[in-house]
Image (cartoon, rainbow, N blue to C red; front, side):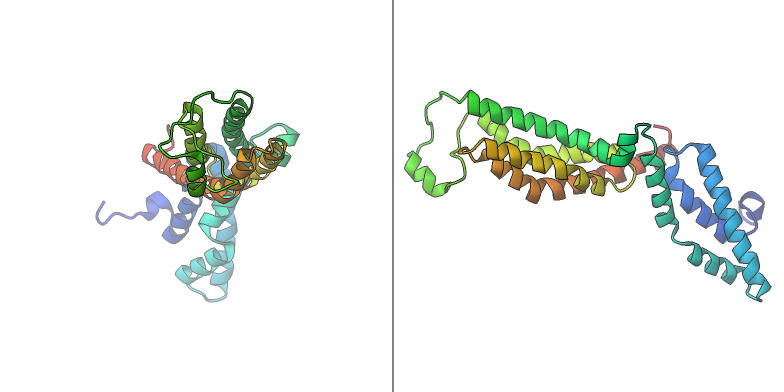
Length: 250
């Protein structure tokens, strides 16, 4: 549209239109159109009043627009705050609203991972493997490689799964959380992990003298929280990119 007057399509103040577009664009596909239009209209009305006030003081429209936008705040920060509040209010249950809808989603995925691992630990305690020790070195020599209180390794299916599962679980649970929570998903993972880790320490203490439970709780602190939060952020970003490519229609 070379030479066309874009103001006919986007309004007279293109800088203001750019700001309003940046404010609501990340919400497409999540927040209903009516709600987005209401937010946009409210922001427009406030900014236009501020721009007119600055223009009466002798400031040109471009500079007045810039000053009004700076005073109103970052489009990304305001959009994130609005989206977070809107998402949290999607739960009708008073308890879930208090706990936080995003925290509830994160807690659900990580609680599933926690339950799977806890069940496997209980199976190992109450149904120990009857397989013979199969490593090429003696248990005493293996103990020098794997010092106490770390458990002695075994070449059974359950033991191998118990070893691999804690590394993979937070990546999967975090990513799934990120795809479902559109804003601040990493913080939701951190907050959801607090009661889960507390539960892990209680279960670990009850399993003594077997140390796998307490070691798993410590592992959750140093690995599950950072890795799960990172995976949630990646999932959130990728979900936002998919929505932008499809225009919000998934």
